[in-house]
Image 1 (spheres, rainbow, N blue to C red):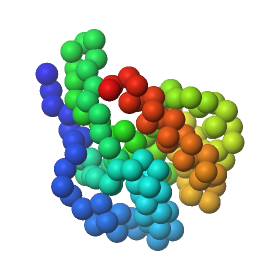
Image 2: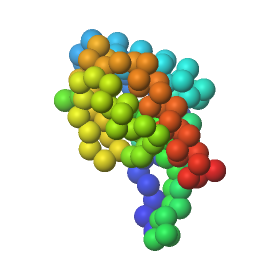
Image 3: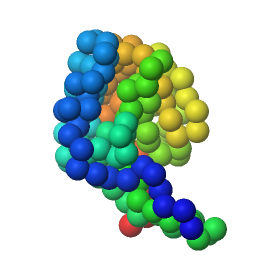
Image 4: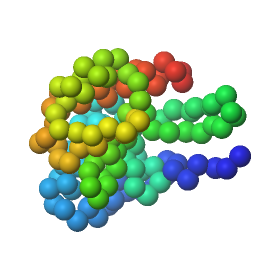
Length: 138
């Protein structure tokens, strides 16, 4: 079975965030990192070379594939900031309806800038996502 390429490591989160060329996106990512750390209670850690994750869990699928993943994470992509939450969590559709300007794809939620979204709704989504993952992978 192949090893996951995206694993938790000791790379510096601030050093990574400081490589973001757009100063507004860089500031948004530092603020997002602080907010996610406060909301989850976990310190920001690098996963691979481009994902900032908070907490971790071990999964094992029926196929036999298993590995570790962050409970919550984000990655500053060229077009948007990708938020990594559970694909299913309590009140997901209702919360996304109040979340603000975003796009979705499976478990990813994409936002252009933090001023486009309701941060209080994001905190609730994060809390519900962590609860969902924790219940599936205790």
